[in-house]
Length: 126
Image (cartoon, rainbow, N blue to C red; front, side, top):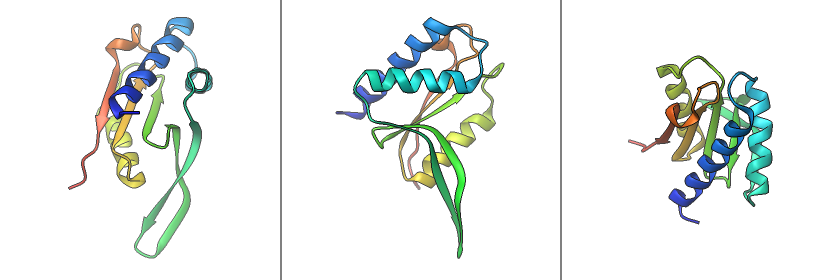
């Protein structure tokens, strides 16, 4: 499956969840429902996937956790906040860099309309 098709399917699943639930719930609720929706659409999903951090000779095995990893290709980061801020973009970019992945999606499920508060993120190593 092409990456654009995959991200399109993920975005569609997120819109479905947001349409059903609306804003105002906990991030964990949206994560569980999005995981269900993605799997129901035939996608391979890993949630709370541990992301190690390596610094010189130090390895921190469970330094970070990805909200959702879809098809081992797209990192999906969920928020339920008043608004997305630069720190949220920095977080997903860091996850992409540390994991070696290139594509991510950042959703703010607390938005009145999800289409107004999500970002498609592409990381290109330097």
